[in-house]
Image (cartoon, rainbow, N blue to C red; front, side, top):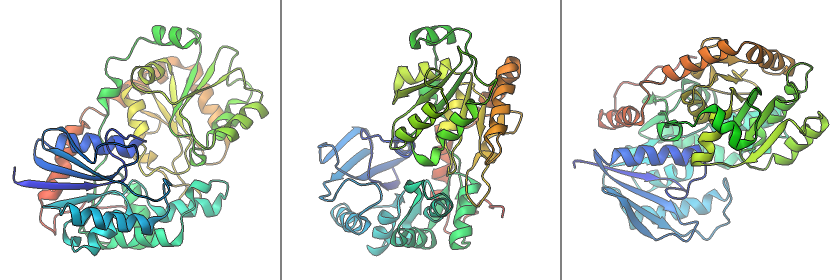
Length: 402
């Protein structure tokens, strides 16, 4: 194979934590049909120092003797990446996800070969925290934001998953050439052969005739699940048999439980914890609609999963001050889902009632949502990525509207 690609990220197969890791595995495993792929990662779980789970893919894991904390300490992680690059010199393009890895590649002299593919803009995340201090996961140290800025400005090419994310980078750090937008692929492995709604609800102990509102994701303050809980407390939204099904776990669980208790919804909200594989397919099959009330989403892969499962989605559009999301790019309002008011839970309550009282409308929205993803397979997304890698340094970038 003529192409070589090195991917650098903290976690990689089988160490899966969230959407970024899922995205990397799907990209890397498909890219092996066209390139020799090496992955540099941290060894957080006592895994082998190197292994090749599939042909043309080799993983090198380095033990990092720093605390396992998501965003800190970055300087120690920078040193680890430099050591990794010296131990395994890249032969071709370098694909990075986070600022420290990007900076390490630049420091080691690979700046002309670095692709920066950030899942979120740390500058806009920090702006969310400035307006909503309780969302402490969005508080980003100035040194890390500086690394993010340098990674964005100095990488050979930048690939973002949404025009919204590209706009966030422009807003925070200015414009640059060679910024490409490639949206993520549809996880057909998750939603293929969903069980019947009848069977799924029976297995989950849900009423056959219930209206089931679903959420899947980290229980992070930025997801703003209490906003959904508050909306569900309005009169007429939930009947006694209706349920809110929340799939996931995380640090915001206590605040969510308090919101459930304060609104008297303990018998109607199910905190199911993290689910995978067949159990997660079952949960999607049991839902009638999907709600993602996040105040920050660089892309939101879970939206694709819900749409692929035939569910209409309700989400925030982002006001570009207190919230930043890509939802207007992903949801065609009143065609494949609904965009809620940024701050008013009563507006969300009205939209939930509309979906509950018009089942055919929500079914048609869900069908259109699924049909809209026909051409977003991971194979086509991987080919889009490889086309950008194969283009010259002045290759055409997709315009990002201001």
